[in-house]
Structures are given as C-alpha cells and as structure tokens.
Amino acid sequence: MTNNIEMIIVPREYYPNNRINLRWLYEIELSEMDYKIHWIYNTLNSQVHSFKNNNNIFHINVIPNFNNITNLINYIRSLPIKYKQISSLIKNNNVKIIHVRDGIFEALISYYLAKKNGLIFSFHLSSFFSLFYKQSLNQITKSQYSSSLLKQIYYYISYKLHPVFLDYILERCDVFNPVSFAMEKKVRESNSLVNSVVTPLCVSKVISNINLKPSQDYGKYIVSSGQIIVEKGIEELIDIFQYYKEEYQDNSLNLVIIGHTPRHIYKARLQEVINKKGLDGCVFLVDELDFDEYFYILSNSLLGISIFPVTSSYYYSSPTRCIDYLMSKIPVIVNSEVPDQAKVVRESKSGLCIPNDKILISKAIAQLVNNKILRALMGNSGKKWALKNRNYSKIAISIDTAYRNLIK
Image (cartoon, helix red, strand yellow):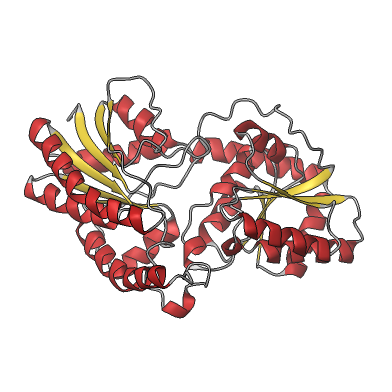
C-alpha cells in the first residue's frame, strides 16, 4: 500500500470556516492518513489557522479578495504566480495529486500541470451558482445579474464561457468531488465521469458549548438558518409563517431567522415587510451571532425549517442547514423539490418532507409544534443518523480509496 501521499490543494478563495469547516476533511482526516498537504491561499484573510502538525504546509499570496474591478485585475495577475508556485512545488516535492476547489482558471492551470507531470487531478465543485451551469440568462435572477454595466459584461462572459470550461474540466478530472448527490447525477448526464466521491458538507467537530445563551429571549419559536439574502426566498418564508399564524390562531409561536447578512439594505427591507404584515415582535432577524449562540438557538427551537426556491444553486446544494438541525437534535421540515435534503430527512426519519406549498408547510408546522413526543423521536433519530453518516472521517476513507486506486 502507498504511504506518505503528497498533494497540493488550490482553493478558489477559502474553505468555509468553523461551522461546516470543509478544511477538516483535509487538514485533519487526510493528514492523519499520512497525506502531506501543500495549501495555496490567495490572501491573509483566508482563515488559515491550521492545526499544528507537520502534514499541513501553507503558502500564502497576499492578494485582495475578488470584490471589485481592482481586485479582479489583481486576481488575474495572481494566476501566473500560482502557476509558478505549483510548478515549483511539483519540482521540489514528491507531489502525487493536485486538488482544486471551485476555481475554473485554477483548475485549468492545475490540470495542465498535472497532465504535464503525470499527476492525479482532482476537482471539487461546491455550487453551480457562480458558474450558471446549463442555465439560460432569463433563469439568472436580477440579484445575480448586477445593474452595473461592467459587472453585467463580466456575468455575460461568465455565462458564456464558464460552462464550456467547466465541461472541459469535468470530462478530464481523475477524481470529481461534487458537493451533493444531485450534482453528481447532473454531471453524469453529460460527462463521462470515471471516479466521483460525493463530499457533502458536514457539521464540524467544534460544536462545543451550546449553553451560551444569546442576550435576547425569543420565547417559543421555530427557526430557519442560512444567509439572509433575497435568493433564499426569505419573504416567501415570512408569508408562510403569516399564513400559519392566521390559519391556526397561534399567537404564541415566533419565527427566528438566523444568518449572515451580506447586504444590510435587504435586511432593512425585510424588517419593513415584517412590520407591514404585523409580525414585528414574532419574527426576528438575527445575524452576526457567536458560533455557540447559533447552536444554542437551534437546540432550543421546536423545529427547523429548510425551504428553498427551486433554482440550480439550491437544487444541487449540500443540505448544510438541515445537518445543523439534525446535530442540534430538532425535527426538520424541508421541501421535497430539493433532492439531497429530502434524501437526508427520509433516510434519517428526522422530520417531514413536503412540497413547497404554504398550506402544506403550515400544516406540517402545526403537526410538529403540537406533538412533543414526535418532535423528540425525530430529533433523536436525526442526530443519531448525522453522527453516523455525515462525518468527514467516513468521507475521507472514500477519497483516500479513490486516490490510492489511481496511484501506481
């Protein structure tokens, strides 16, 4: 058996941090399997706080994040730097694998160098969102398609070219790591994948202190987590909750919506919607929480809701917030149109999986809110399933097997 496998990881920007922490899969699990990992990061803001061991080596380029045209130019300038850096690492080390997360141009560079040097090329895709994969322009929402002329040109070029480049990469990668089973199925429909290992996002092992109570008391509540952005369908969720309150005459139940708010003007607009509907005092928008406060709120909720609009960015996504709910031992209500979260709930028996219909969702809320025994059974079943099936140790074994089968 081959030991001491050396690999290079090239993230497009950075890996998610302490909540789902995809880096754990590599930093901890694979490094403990005798993998020596060279990490190439763009910026000092990439949350490089590795565990102290000799198997993770970080190579950092101080290049600004990709937020505006200046940073776009800097990003383009960074590509030849990465080319030289990867080439140097290959030349001076016994590298066997180059792994890229999301970045199309990073993937093209890495694929060329992998094939030139007889290495394994591995590619992880976290979302079709930024790549507009197989979409038409009228399927891209206005929030994605910026009003700025410069950004409109950029998005149009991305729409035209990214799918072409992505197909090229997917046809040629030795190991493909889709973030969901739905994504794997979609890619297999049009690409001849040989090796694929689904790498769904898991809750990291750092859930430590769920007793850190937030300053505000939310009363009796249900919760919905995730980014507070228009693409998530937050206003539709508020409409559903309003319908539930009116239909079931439940004046005591509150809704807590938790998530990072990248566009604070949208949060202000949502608050106006809440006030106009007469829901102020029973719908709370909560952002910038401490990590442990987040899990305290989840763990003390009656149930968690994960209702997504059916767009490619969510249809093919990993059901991260659903796993958060399972780990917090609360039952879940999900919409059946999103395949991976529906699969999780059905297999784990952790909640109710129903169509995205406000009448049916309201009925499901009422069913669980009024049945403490059923909530406890689903909560216990969900956490037991998540601990067994959604952990990076298990995924690492599958990735390790795929790599070792390719190394001669």
